[in-house]
Amino acid sequence: MNLRLYNTRTRKKEPLQTREPNVLHMYVCGLTPYDSMHIGHARAFMVYDVLHRYLEHRGWRVIHVQNWTDIDDKIIQRANELGLSAKEVSEKFIAEAEEDCRNLDLLQPTITPKVTEHIPDIIKAIQILIDKGYAYARGGDVYFDVSRYESEFHDYGLLSGQTRDELIAGARVAPDEDKDDPMDFALWKAAKLNEPFWDSPWGKGRPGWHIECSVMSLKYLGAPFDLHGGATDLVFPHHENEIAQSQALTGFKPIVTCWMHAGVLTVAGEKMSKSLGNFVTLREALKRHGKNALRLLYLSTHYRSPLDFSEERAEGAKASLRRIRTALEVIQNKLTSETSSETEESKGRASELTQLVEESTRLFYEAMDDDLNTAEAIGYLFRMVGAALTFGVTVKELPSRSEKLALNLLKRRLTKLLSVLGFDVAELEEPERLEDALGEQLLNLLIEVRSQLRQRKIFDLADMVRAKLNQLGIALEDTPNGTKWKRL
RNA sequence: GGCGCCGUAGCCGAGUGGCACAGGCGAGGGACUGCAAAUCCCUUUACCCGGGUUCAAUUCCCGGCGGCGCCUCCA
Image 1 (cartoon, rainbow, N blue to C red):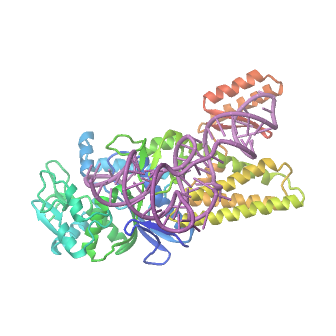
Image 2: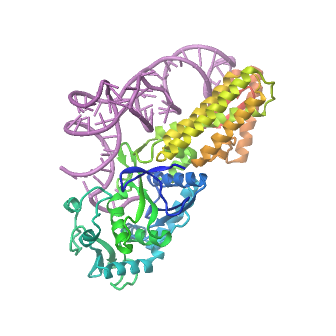
Image 3: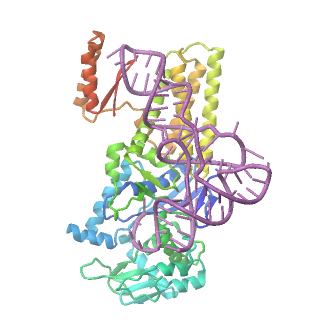
């Protein structure tokens, strides 16, 4: 496999290099569970989901660690608002997010560690940093000493492309902080009144924001490890600080071979975020558009580009999906029909079709290998879809044996590659169902009555049934094989 | 202000030093249909601006203009 990925650390596309052949050790920054997961989070996670799936498809093993930052200022604030404990808040939103991720068909990461279950590890790491001279205690807080780190490692700011001096210019110090240098950041924060806390050598408190990722990634993946992911908005300060901590702790440089960052999701050109309040929850989007349409929407833009979300685009994705669905249906019809005898024309069509499938497949893999260019890769899948649809209409005679073989190849290849990208092919192939069995029976009854009306040429009534069902969100299509319904 | 990314048809969105095969959505026309829908065929056809490098630039370089992200919590 020749997968090349863009590495934020080196600003280049590079062949994927791993510690062990055909095994990827990957850490992905997860959520701070203080509110519902939104479709921006899902976009980032889907990038690593596709990487994970693609590598497994190519015979790799993926060790995928994704954390929960389940103690943090925002969780404490939310707990106060809701009158719950911090633990109750994080547990509630973790459970919700896990359900949402399942519903989006995101692969379960191999390990999903929580900060609150690693406090002793974190305290130990902070102590090591203090002992090595990379951190200092002030009151009940502990800070990481960036200038000391920089004097040893000379790479602070490398990831975000800024020098330490440039960063200082923009840095701010909160009024109650007592740091030696504005660049220094908290490893341990003393507990204020009524805040949850753990005992530590520096008094009651909780971990700072970045240390948990250093500790948990090193604990589960070892050092150095292969790939670290997250969205671009984490590059600074989170990942920059994580590198400093982890390298100071272990002495390895670089601590992570490849840094991979997903572009953020925007709405009307502005980043979707909880603070801006312009977010759509994943739950809501799944309900409205379904997992396959959302996945198609996400994967039709390259993962590093910003993705501007809109209802129109989501509807467009749904329409594209219907095209795939129709193509699979067309193929199925051809495959189950009778076989005609072979002719020169049928042989020609079959070989043309086979050639198209093989070429599209080759190009699909090339696109995926080129920094997971799913947008391009999906284009090749639609070439197969288009070929199937055209074949379905332009070839009037029954398919020959070789044509059936070619169609069968197309179908198997298309569904295989769709599932590599994480699409639920079963859902695409299944006839649609209503969740309510009685409702579905009633619908079928209506369709039957309407067919009778059409046979007796009472078209105004037949059309009324169709129009009214349309208003209820059910579309009817009269085909040579009877009337079919689908949801709008 | 600093760092970075981006500016391709009506919209979204790949891609490329050599006539732009992406792909999807939408719109218009035709075929099909009792009428529709779906599908097929046709049409709608574009590289922000100005310099430079080059035989050749949308693609590389420089400078604008515009947008976005980060520099502060953020996936």
